[in-house]
Image (cartoon, rainbow, N blue to C red; front, top):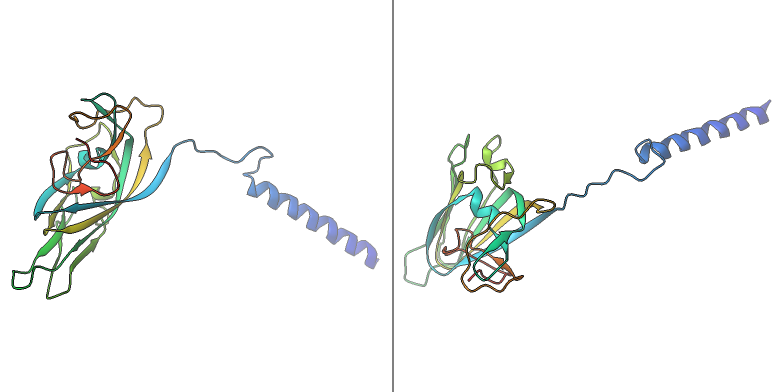
Length: 212
């Protein structure tokens, strides 16, 4: 009788293992679900030589990285982008000069327009770290061709600041690339970085060739 009980337990354990195996594969003996969409998290870094105040729109984010098609045309490689956080570091002012203040103000739809600010003091740099307010449009995906003129935040960056913008990115796939900022004398096929505040802006991207 004991031998029969043990045999029954072994069969039941085997069945449970088989069910667990099927569950881990999505109840299918075939390949698991596949998502061809190319998604990535990334931190863009920008620097500015002079004090800068700029309002950043959805278009600014979508235009951050482009590929030159001709010497005077470019196409975006970003089809969608979502803000995760913005961080600004501002170095202390020259000894004897006025302190420098940097800030981020979220101004998107349903945003409380709260200003996050910090000021240098002595040898201490100013440091601002903020995330999009809950339930505000700042947390929404920005997609090519949709509400690109929407303002997201205003940045005030003292001279020689470093600004990090952390985002989630959805790259162009089957879509025809949306036209990007108009370059002057670009090399076809070359990938370029665009300043956070636009092609003629002061917040230049670090780590990419700048769009001419």
